Image (cartoon, rainbow, N blue to C red; front, side, top):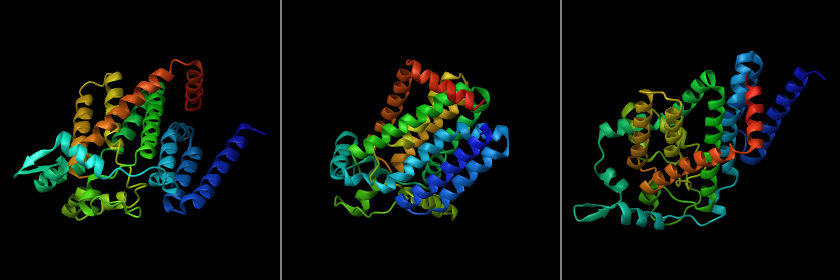
Length: 303
């Protein structure tokens, strides 16, 4: 059997297996077909496109794992922290406002501004494009650094997913809308980002959060983790002034996470810690020859 035929059978087998498994786990979704079509198109279109899609398969693995969380809600494994995290947030970061102690989320809800609604929405829209565009830059400029960045990204997410199941936590908007009672059938919510949609007459964030894999996965804030990773590798690759942009986006996302009511400051700090832990873990694993050989194999497959 030729190598080409083996590759064709492997890609076809993985594509069909993914669609079948997805159907039984979480039901049919058009996004699944789109992903399969995109992967096959990129794989067969040209040598360059094949290398790109193979390299970015690490991000595809992340997306699939995140999507499959719908089949195993974390609230089935541990009690959801609703009141505890809210009161701890107020105790540590509470603000006195007209004689009342408010959490930062509550303060921003009262003192919301259209300019901040727009700014927060813009920053929150960068959390996917910026890491992916940065990864694409690394792919064409430093393939080994691309693999390091991608694998670290995956490790950070896996660490975050583990925490989601160990410590399910409700976001601030949940408390605002439902109080401290647990409601397992709660759907995803745009929270403060709805004001961005409303101002521009769009449904960008509504469409994103309608597909949320788990409402009770607010801690850690992985939105807050990703820009830390981008800035770390930006500094590592000596990107100069571009790192100022990365740093600004990072702080902007942190602010938007709290301002929009999607995360507590505690969630943001946990996300930062998760990013640091993932970076440190990957640096540790790089010392093992087995990991080095694995990365070299990936490097060969994408060159």
